Structure formats: C-alpha cells, structure tokens
Length: 86
Image (tube, rainbow, N blue to C red):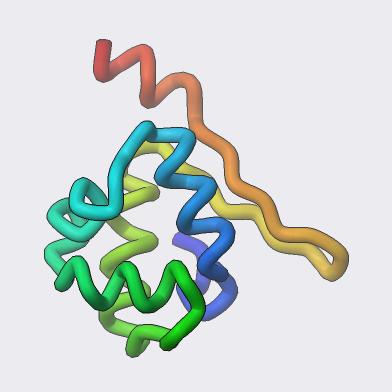
C-alpha cells in the first residue's frame, strides 16, 4: 500500500471516476462519514491518517493503484482486478 499521506484529493476523485463510484459509494466502502470525504475532496480539510488509510485501502481493494514521483501523481486501475469481478 502506498503511504496514505502521499495521496491527494485529486487522486481520490480520479480513482472514484475510474471505478464509477459516487462519494457515498467510497464512504461506505471505507466505512467513513460521507461529510468527511466531501470536505476532503473539495479541499476544506485533510482527514486524519486513519481515515485517509481507510480511503486508500478501500480503493486499492478494488484495483486502484496510486503512483507518485517528484513531478506527477497519477492513478491507474489494475485490469486483472476488473476481469476477476466480471
């Protein structure tokens, strides 16, 4: 698992888009409050590490992979995970 502190709100929104998940979908999967996720995604707050870890774990469990280097951050979806789910 990537260090949750390295994952930003844009990556979380992109990951949700790749999965075709709504905010309520992710909040339920991560077992966090919807309001907390909304505040994080619009940039009003940064969740505590435990909450951010839950978000990252929920997304990674569905095949999301987070990537970071010095110049860019990105998100990808593991195609093998999609095929298993179908």
